[in-house]
Image (cartoon, rainbow, N blue to C red; front, top):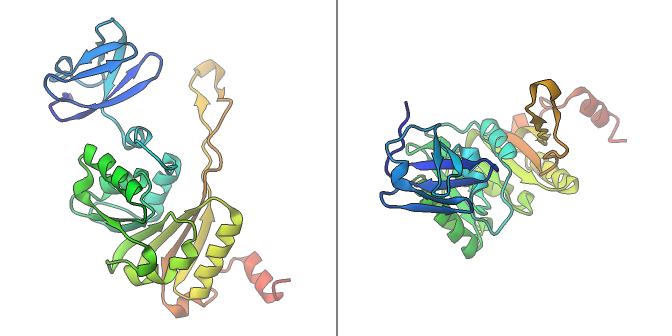
Length: 279
């Protein structure tokens, strides 16, 4: 049995599916469109139960997931979607204890997920060039108690990264192909590189840059589409709208020049294209 305790983050979901995330404090109160809920009524109670506001409206009390926390972030920029973030964590092999660089902090959606994954034994180094955006991300992470896992840096990454031999590096910037040499210098041998871009012409430019540099191999380009379904057993069907294109994801590994310039990574169609002279 999981009990709600002081300083815990809890998620409250109303019958209209409106959600609230609060940190429990003795004497605290949540004011909603369906009435007020005293924190004291939640403290010491099991999660997964129902609580009612002073107006009698029901709410379910749960532990918030990383997905829930990202959706509730205050933002002044577009954040990465959870569907993309989850895949990025897997492709970059982020795990407890990892050291990861991200450039383009934004409002901190990916930063949050990285920090929760690496834990206090790891480190996230988050670079941002705009002071207002960096401040908001720091505030968002501090509110969740995750800022202790992150070093926020206000820096133009054209100047390079302070770190070396990091496990993974992710770029969410407009022209990532302009910072590839900096990424190579920061990554460990065999390290994981990733980026996100909104358009195919940008992707083509990045892939060309990765190939030309002679330091990356196993280049992949992917996008994630999510189609939710209505969970009605006898009338199971997709909802009318889906989360389709939100960005192209590019992944590769830092390798030796010999490996990067070899033909290890050419599939049959690409090999035929190269042999024909690109015609």
